[in-house]
Length: 217
Image (tube, one colour):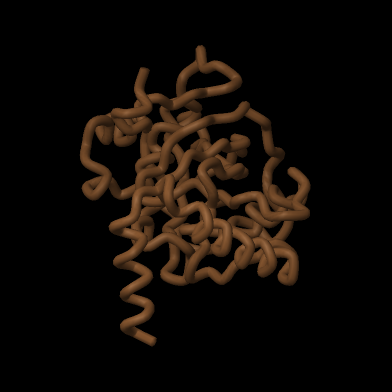
């Protein structure tokens, strides 16, 4: 079995993509059947590989205010070891979820918000900011993200689930241009926060600075 598996891997590596239609059809059929039988889910072990060329997500940005100081930065949650995405483990991120089969925007927001609060009523009101479109190299895909903002007081942070850290506006600006492996936060989130911080942002933010060279025009 191990030799057969390695043979398949070798075949895929050596065969031009245009000649793999029958193989990809067999794989697509297998994935589709599994999704139909499991309410759209796939095993977490292959979650990232099956995200598709463009993923649709919901993300919540937490803007932190201190009494007498105003906005001081953005709170981000540390990704835990059991979350999908080896490249993102140990990094802070804005809470985010990919839309699943059968989702509505509301159900995706509610699931996403469980990373912060037990239910939406416990948190502050969410404000829709627009949509961003960016590339995620670790996941080999593009992501179309519905962006939402919540204002929280620094006193609220201990009430949030998990480990959170506030990154000041200056700290975020100083991260620009650094390699992704040196960043304490998920790289795409940095570019999304820079979009959020831009008072002249467009409602549909195409974050071309995240694009690989072949996509930049």
